[in-house]
Length: 163
Figure 1 (cartoon, helix red, strand yellow):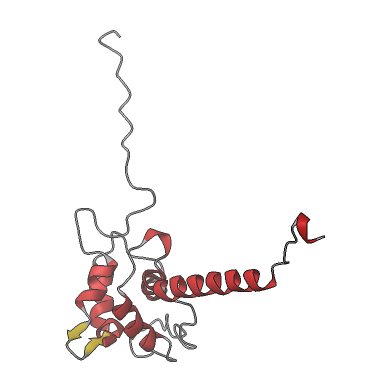
Figure 2 (cartoon, helix red, strand yellow; figure 1 turned 180 degrees about the horizontal axis):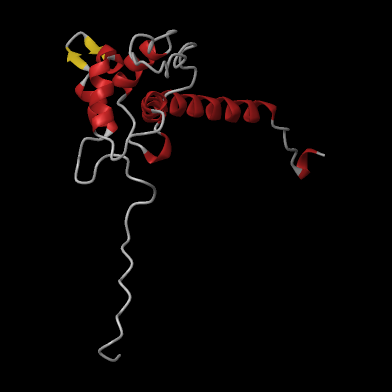
């Protein structure tokens, strides 16, 4: 190589996908949601997630403002519940408490008060999906019942000596 040519930079291997929180910021969506939940010996109260304070805290942690921030907040919460896109899911107790709240109708009703009226229809019918731990449990149960049915309905094999 002569002195005028420049070597190509080495490829930097990183995590796949986009990083939605600000660079150098460890305030992930999960951390923000957990910050706004109330933990007590009686149980977990997730009502703090469904407040303007949590929404504003989440919004301020984003690297760029989403085009539809209200919908993005709802999607971030439901994706976290499902553990989709490689997200770390909530614990079983946290998931159960959040699902109780988010499945009720109009849970986000008073949350997105803005002049444009965007976000008015978010959460009107409630969340109907399954949480991560619900899906794991459902998958295990359905696999076990399918195995049991297959075992019961399996044809009996006859040996050569039976004939």
